[in-house]
Amino acid sequence: MVRSAEWTSNDKWPVILFLHGGGERGRDGLIQTQVGLGTAVRRERSRFPAVIVFPQAREQQRWSDPPMRDVALRALDAATKEFNGDSERVYAVGLSLGGQGVVRIASHQPARFAAIVSVCGPYSDGGKMDELHRADYPYLSEADPFAALAATVKHLPIWLFHGDADMTVPVEQSRKLAGALQTAGANVRYTEYPGVNHNSWDRAFAEPEFMSWLLMQLASNK
Image 1 (cartoon, rainbow, N blue to C red):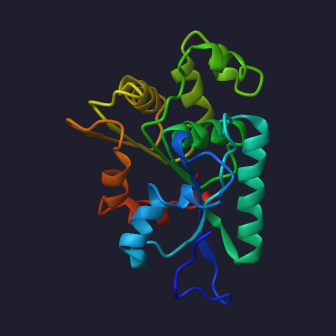
Image 2: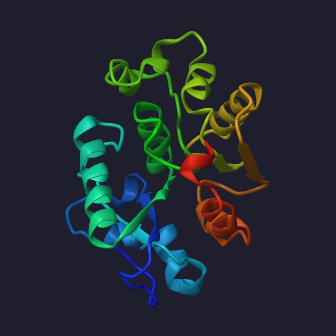
């Protein structure tokens, strides 16, 4: 967990749940803070006036697995309570495996967040891993899983990022979800970086409007 140097219990603070990618899984409690949002905070902490929660997924687990989903949400609840979090400004941000995680968790508990940000996430791979999750995430069983997913989260402001040269997660994953969200009338932004491979998160979290856009999203406005 990271909090602003100016944090005080007299104020209500935005809370960001950050879900890391597959390479940061483990039990050390540290590596998940050294990539993505954690790196951005270290570079310019003043840009992130929020309580940021950094849970860590276990080896071979995904954030959309119910046990890991519960770990993430319990960590979010604990930090929100301990650090006087603002229930109107609770956000989920994730990259790669975590990008999938924030979208799937939001589809499972659509009232949980004021907005989500997903960077280069694999939203529906149609493979054997998704077979394990069809009961928890019914959209995966639909003929058009992207349209079905969009229908469950269309009330949420969403910003998607992806590099068009991503060799790990095809950019079509974000293109299809962005298109489905637009068709559903959602408040969606999509940023695609030409020539960028899988690491589109460093550029995403450095976007000048990233935090201003996120913090102006309120749960009561959904």
